[in-house]
Amino acid sequence: MMTISESDKWEICSSSRMKYGQFVDWEKIDPEAAIRYQRILQSDHQQLKTMAREGFWAMPHTLRAKAYYHIIQSINSSRTVTPDREVHHELTKELFGEHNISTHPVPDYMEAGDIPRYCLNKAGLNSVKRILLSLGKCFPDMNFCPILPEMVSLLLHFSEDEAECFHSVSRLICYNDPNKRYIDQTFLTYRASCMTFGDLANRCCRGIRKLIASSYQNLFEFYSDWIMWIFADLPFTYAIRVLDVYLLEGYKVLYRVALALLSLYKVSVSSRVADVEDFRTDMKRFVESVARHCTAERLLEMAFMIPMATRRELNLLFNANMHALMQKGVSIHQKRHSVEMVDFNNFTSSVVTVASMRVVWAWIPERFALFSPIRLFSTSEHGRSLASLYSHVEGHEPALLIIKTVDEEVFGAFLSTDLIERKKHDSEGLTYFGTGECFVCTIRTSKERYQQAMVNIMTRGSSHQQVRDSSCASSRINNSGCSPITKGTTTLTCPAGTPQDPSYLTIPFTSPSEEPMTTKEPKRPKEQEASMFIAGTDSQLIIGGDGGHALCLQEDLEGGYSEACDTFKSIALYKGHFKIQALEVWGIQNSISFSHSFPSE
Image 1 (cartoon, rainbow, N blue to C red):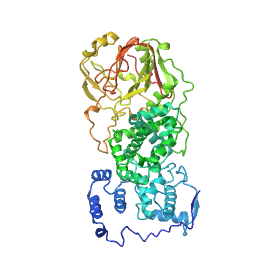
Image 2: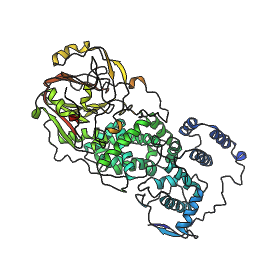
Image 3: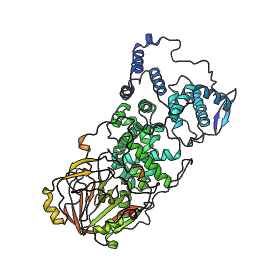
Image 4: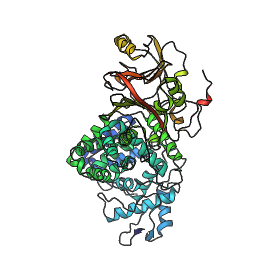
C-alpha cells in the first residue's frame, strides 16, 4: 500500500505558480548563471547535446532546473494533448479529496513500493507518491515501468512545483519516436530493452559475459537490471549528470552509460570472481559505490567513447527482441511474465561439451539465445558432403557451425543469414552475404569469440568490392581441396530475406529499411567497413573474406583451413590445414524451414 499521511500532506495551489528567484534578482547575485541560461535558450538541439555532455548547466542547480524545463518543453509529443498542470490538479482532487489525505495501493506499473528519496525531504517524498498515483490514473495502459519512481524523484528536485514535475514526466511518457525512446511502459518493451542491452554488452564487454555464462548464472536476469543500475543504484550526483544528457538524447545514452558501468565492473570483478556468489547483487553494490572507481564526468567520457550502433539499428534490434519475447508467450498486456530459459541438461553433441555450448549460446544474439539449440546437420548422421550440409541447413536462420578436428581442436562460426542466399545473386565470382551479427570462435582449449566492431549490426546495404587476391594463399587452398577464389568484382548485398511466417524472428531486419533516418548518424570510419561475412559455392563454404578466410571448408568436408581475417578481426582459428573429425550445424528450436519455398537448382 502507498500511504499519504496527514502530517506529510502537500497542498497544491494552482494559482501560486511560484518560480525560482521570485523575490530575487538572480542576474545580480549570479550573473554567470543568467548569461549561461540565455545561451541555453539561443542554442539548437545539437548545441544543447554538446553542452549537456560537458556539464554546461550542472551548477548552480537553479540553472539546471531552468534548462530541464526548456528542454522538456521542446520535446514534441505525438499525442494531440499531453497531460498538463491542470490535469494533475484535477486528478489530485479526485484521488485525494480536499484534504489531500488518502491511502492507495501501489500503482500497477511499479515493480515495488520503494520510492528513492535522493535529496528530497518528507514533503518531496510525499509529492512523488502523489505524482506516481496521478500518472497511473492518467496512463491506464502503462502496466510496467519500474524506473518511473526514480524518474519522478529526480525531476522533482528541479521542478518548480508538483504539477510541473507531473507535466514533465507526462511529456516523456507520451513521446514515441522509435529511434529516440524515453520510457518503456510495458513488461514486453522493458524486457526487449534488457535483451537489446544484452546484445550490446555481448560486443562491448565480452569477458564479463563469458564469465557469467561459465558460472552457470542467468545472463538474462543479470541484464534485466541494467536500467536500474542508472536510475536506482547510481549516486544522485551521477544520476543527474546522466539525466542531463538523457533528456536530449533519449534511450541510447542509457545504453552507453550502462555499458561503461559494466566495463568498469568487469575490471573490478576479474580479480575477485571466485568470491562472487551472485553477480546481480555484486553489480548493484558496485554501482552504488562507483565513486571509488571514477567520477561522474569520467563515466560519461567512457560512455561516449564506446562504439555504438545507429539509432535505426538499435530500433531494429529492439523490435526483433520484442518479436522473440512474443514467441515465448509474452504479450503487451502482461504485467509480469517468467521467461523460460534454455535447459542444457539434455543437450548432447559429439563435437562440443555442454559447458562449452552454454558459453557459445551466451555469445549469440539474445533473441535466439531464448530458444534451445536443435541439430540440423552432423557428418556422423548425414555424411561428409557440402551438398548434404546445404540441403539440411538451407531455410534455417541463423545457424551455428562447429568443427572438431582429428587432433581434438574445436572451433566454429555463427552464421546470421540463411545459406540459401548464395543462390540468389548472379555473379561470376563469389557473392558475400550476411550481417554484422556473424562471428567466429575457438572453443577448445580457449573460448574466444571474434566479431566485427559494433557497427551495422544487422543490416548491410549494397556495395561493390574486389574479392581479395587469393594468390598469397593459393598453395594452402590447393592443399586443402578448396577451389581458388576467382578474382573480380563481387556484389555485397544485405540479405533480402526468405518467404517467412510473419512471426519469424528475422523478419524485422532481413532487409534495410528505406525510410529516411530521423536522426543524423555519424559516418563510420573506413576500417569498420569490413563486410565479407559468408560465401559459398558447390565446392566450398567460406566464412570471412576481408584480408583472409576465417574458415574455408572443402566440398567433401574432410578438411579445410583458417587464416587471420579482417572481417572479424580474428587470428587463425587453426594453424594451417585441418582435418575434420566431426562437424555439426545447430539451429534454434523455433526456426522454421522454408527451403521448400524455393525451386531446386
